[in-house]
Length: 147
Image (cartoon, rainbow, N blue to C red; front, side, top):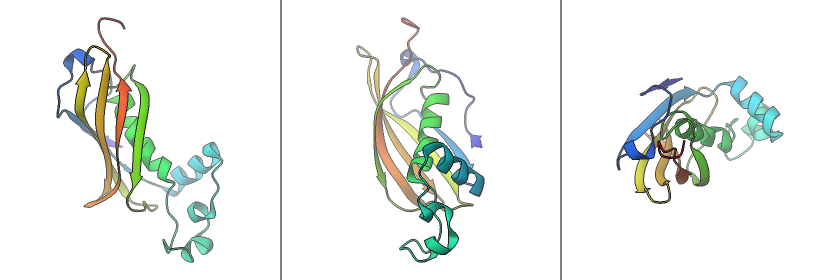
């Protein structure tokens, strides 16, 4: 995995509108198999080449929530990072992710409610120039005053 900043915590007092963090990760067959095992989602479109060839995707695809998990990784590890609590996430899946694709997952601070420690984050994932997922997250950010 490649990202642009070290893991840790950015307290709400240090967040700024427009601040971004990202990671890049190649989605492997092993990732898809492990996600299927953990989630118990064994839809053959993810696991069976013969089955998947006959679908609208014309081949296997990664689970959408596996891709969305990369957004969670950026939020939980980088922005705001350790101590962040997810309150909500909207997701719109725009295009499939296939084994071997390198996914770029980015999170951007869109709004900050200091009084309630709430941060709204724009989220998206892309493979090359193709946006594969977009959405918005609401999180409870860590604070030096309470943590």
